[in-house]
Image (cartoon, rainbow, N blue to C red):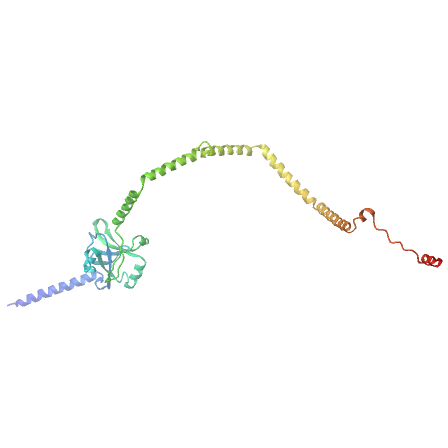
Length: 308
């Protein structure tokens, strides 16, 4: 008679082998990702996260680097002790990132370089996921403010693409609402009037651009006529010949000019000498030089004395 426990033993062994095979296949098909080291970060979203579920992908520039592990409100996690009026009610999305893809020691540096999260839709399926990327215009989208101590590193978020479009449209609408159409109309009419005055002129001091353009056209016609006149070429040729002749004359008479300058210099010196003599003896220039003094002989003086 067969032992009934043998059938249970074989069934249990079969179930155990099936479980082991399932584990092995899971490890093989997941490329060992079950044993990869991961760490947790979180981000805060202000709008609706409809379509974003736990387990959705987290991508960095399109590459899958982790998954979403938790989606909760900040009022439940961090603001449960605050009054409802003081709560932000952000959506706290916690993500598990793979160490193999983004090192945990680098995440703070990436955040400092404006790493941002953004909820995006995956193609036509409508499945939402979180996209990580370093943005350049982060100053236009400041990080959401909070007063609690986060449990994990916080990556600031960007509005969804739909929210960005709606925000831009709303800004345009607000700008149109704040625009003073009557004043703008008056300024436009004044601009058109000034443009007409500038173009057509006022018939007085301002001739207008049309008259000025016509005058310029007439001036260009006269210049063309003058440039095509054969007498102008003759005048230019005579002028050039005269310039060459004058230059040759000046170069040939350099020595004569130098001699003339020397003679003028000598005459100036003589004139200076004459001027000095006149200043010392003005009468001498008219009456001649002063005669020499006459001395009497000595014997004449002696005879006269003896006669006495």
